[in-house]
Length: 134
Length: 368
Image (cartoon, rainbow over all chains, first blue to last red):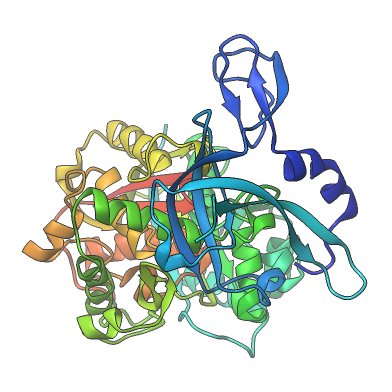
């Protein structure tokens, strides 16, 4: 959407740049996006960074996109299971879609996500790419 | 507690209504429904998903009442994304059951065609987690594609099996005077349409359409279609953390409660209108409602007609976002009494209204 909000972007930077998730101190469950309370009932959660490697669960090539992504389309959108078992959804880059397959080794990369016009924010975040490239 | 009856209703032709404001079509359909019910209302519930983002209007209900000169009654806006319609019906139902109100109207309305198609994608994506999904370019369509891919693999179907959904919807919708696309299609039309998010093609998407539907519900009547139960549930698991991708959990729970309260089983259902904004959601909804076994929806379609979405569903009738749930309620009720739709043989119908990708679902059981 045009004219993204500076405060919203700024406050989400830890999640966008470093995959900061919330882990329950009592039962160890990990939440990404973060939650305020664990499903076990505990409110004692700590910030943890998610691992940067994992495997592709499934992906699709998306041709209908919102206004921020017109120049980047088509987007590859995928679900990746990180090495600690936590799944994260996001864009897949540096890949030829027809060579991707579930189970492929993936790694987290730091990329530009949205450039809000000529004078607006340039916003960054995590994406995924196949290890070794394809 | 008093029973709740559908006293009157009206539907607006789905389409692109560039010549009308959102309050125009809402007022028009409400006025028709009030004439149909021959009743005065003491509250108005307006279901709408995108009035701020697409139409730049808030407190829409007040402007609808202003258009009709209906003074002094309360208005409430209900927003649960594309599941707003079902949620508004639920609140109206509870207001009547508690006897706080005697007759209320539910108007579902949305006009997505007031903005360009890419802006519609922005708006629809806001039904997802705006900070962790929409921000990265993820849209409901891309999630539907992932779910479709996993479903087809798990239950060993071909894409052609899924494409039958669009064919069935168009064959149903051809007879719906209010549908956006009132024509039959062939399997080749669906299978050869452009890929939008593989494996999904254009014909797997319910086209966004402008529309409005109104239902007047009263607790003082003793005739006509009756709402037997309403249940709403929420799936609080983020998409990426769900245990599987072939269950609509919000629907599963809402259906269980709604059937229990109505004291019927899925086997008693003669007609169902389910939320099929994407073909795969319709398939999963039929299964999560309990109408067919898990993984069996596409096989059931091969074996014969499914009594699901006789309106044409989102594919043929159109996806009117927050208005959809109200359309679905009226369609099911009218199918049971044979008004404007072919009469179905049976006593019970079910509505499934869903917001987001299995975020919230409302199930309404209607009986005659």
